[in-house]
Image 1 (cartoon, rainbow, N blue to C red):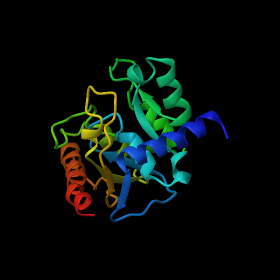
Image 2: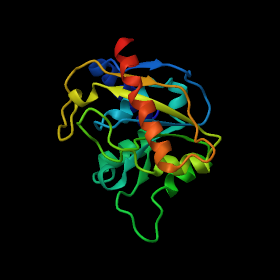
Image 3: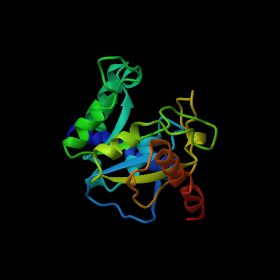
Amino acid sequence: MSLSNTTGLLLSFIARLVTGAQGHWYGCVPKAEQRIYFANHQSHLDWVLIWCALPRELRSHTRPIAAKDYWTSTPFKHWLTREVFNAVYVNRQRTDDQDPLEPLVEALRNGDSLVIFPEGTRSNLGDPQAFKSGLYHLARQFPEVQLIPAWIDNVQRVMPKGEVVPVPILCSVTFGAPMQLLPDEDKRAFLDRAREAVTSLRKLGRSA
């Protein structure tokens, strides 16, 4: 077994040990089909929890989005995100000659699934911030890809923004029913509906 595979299994074990990393599925089941999982964003552990909640056979085809400037800033972060999680790097600073969605589009064209956080940055406010437009543009360009909302609960208490040492607290990831961009649905209406699909899962996750 390669070092990256061993590290992935070790991280999954640690995440489950520290957080429980429970996954609850409502309206869909874990399945080997191309999907975009989109969720609230509170911690660097968010995509680790989603990754751990997926069956092992789906992880190699499900790639998290990682901010390039942060996750390539040290050799270890770069190795971890590239070799273990197969992350898709995005630039947070947009330039005139570069479309920030291009790496995501390329991954979807290659048949991969994605984990994205439409808020664009972490927040400790409880409710998600307004979603940015990337999810809408991907939904328009790839209507055949399922859009799966997910609510990540409690992880902000495990490793809140600004902290690097996790605290053992039970967490869960609740996955909802697939949604699609409706014909003639405008961007803001779709993004508000997608945000509502995420927040509506909060009660389901806590009652499970």
